Length: 99
Image (tube, rainbow, N blue to C red; front, side, top):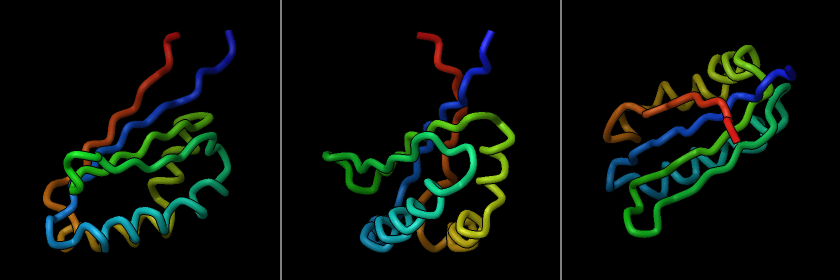
């Protein structure tokens, strides 16, 4: 059986007074992340009816690649600003595609 990729849904909630800053910070992750080994898909969405709600839809070749991403300098930099930018901790979930 072939190895299954890892899918990630990551929900982030911006502080209402920081929406534009959060959008810039999150879009700033895209180029570096897409260049990482193991990144298949890395897409950012913003909720049309609730602009504080951002969601990444990600696909990674394996857990090792995803774990390296979570330890990358650009992610650590964002984490260092989390208290000022986000209203809650991120909700990051890993999935295996079934069908």
